[in-house]
Image (cartoon, rainbow, N blue to C red; front, side, top):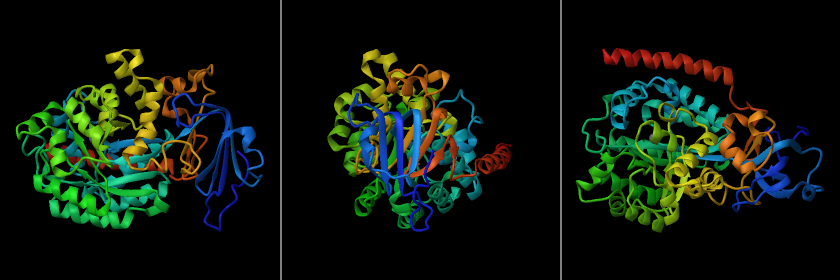
Length: 470
Ligand SMILES: [Zn+2]
C-alpha cells in the first residue's frame, strides 16, 4: 500500500483511493469479470471501474494505492438481517431447541437482563466481526430500549460501517399463537416504542454523511396488535422509514394468520405493509400466492439459511421466490442461531441448501453473490448507492486475498469466493471510500478492548440470567 490518500481539509479522511487487483467482480451482470482490474474512488464515490491500463493517468502518487496482485475485488457485502445484541450470547444457548422455546426460555431471557453497557459491548463485537469478514452494510432487526439505542448508534457510526438500524416496535406479549411468550424484561409499551423510533430517526437517519438510516423493526406476529400494524404502516409512509419483521419463520406463524382468515401477505397488504423497503425475514413457509404478492409489490425477503437450518425451521423456497421475481437478499441473523456474522459463509449455505433440494443447476455461485450484494441493496432501497461496483456509486469495496491454500490454484473467482473462501480471507474493506479494514485489521475499533469488554459483559449477563432461573 502506498500514497497518503491526499488528506482532505484536516478531517483525516482519505480523499482518493486506487485499488488494483487480479480481478474485479463488479456484480453488474452475471459473468462479468475484469481481469487485472482497477477501481478508483474519489471523495467516497466510484469514478472508475475497469482495466488497470485504463486507470493510468487518472490517479496521482498522492492517492492511496492498494495493490493486491492476488486479490479479488468485490462490492461490500450487505447483511439484511442482523441482531447486534445477540453476538454476546453466542454458544450459550442449547442447539437442540426449536424457535419459540429457544426465544422464550433462552434468547429473550438473556437479552431481557441487558443494560446499556451489554448492548454496546455486543454491538461492537458484532460490528467488529462484520467488518473483518467484509460486510459493509447491515440491517438491524430491531433494538430494545434496554440495549441503549444512542450508545449503539454512536458505536456503529464511529466504526465506519454503513447501517440501517431499527427500533423494535411491539404492544403485545405473544409469539404467533403462543401467548405471554415474551418475558417481562423484553416487553415494551407501544407508544413508547413509537416515541423512541421517532426520536432515534430524527437523531440518526442520515448521520455520517448518509451512512446511517433508522427504520422500524416490528416484533413478530403475535406481539403486534392490528392497530399497531396500521400505525406503523402510516408512520412509514409519513417518515419514509422502511419496515422489517420476522415472518413465516415457522409454521406457527402461518397458523396464526390462518386462524384469522389471512395469509401473511394478505394480512400485510391489508395493513399497507407490502412494497419497497419492506424486508420480511426468513419466509420459510411462504405460499405461492404470497410470493406473487411480494413480487408484484416490490417487497423483499431476507433469507437466513444457517439460522433456519440450526433451529430446524426448514429451508426457504428461494429458487421458487426468485423464479416468481421476489427480491431475495441474505442475512446472518444472530449469534446463537448462526453462529457467525460472516456473509461469505452464508453465501455458501444459501447455495448448498438450494442445490441439495433442487439440483446443482438450480442455484449458482453468482445467484448467491447477487443475494449478498445487489439484492441486499435493493431490499434497503439503496440500489442507486451500493451493491455493485459502478461509476457514481459509493466506494463500499471488499478485497479477498486468494494467496492461501484454500483458494489456490486461482480458477473461477466467484466459485472460489462462494464455495471455498470464508470471511477470514478478507484483506481490505472500504466503506464510503474510507479504509476500515487493512491487511485484515480493523482500523476503527480497538479489537483487544472490544473482545475484553465482551467477555466481561457476558459474565454479567450470564450471572443475572442464572439468578432469574432459580
Ligand atoms: Zn432474527
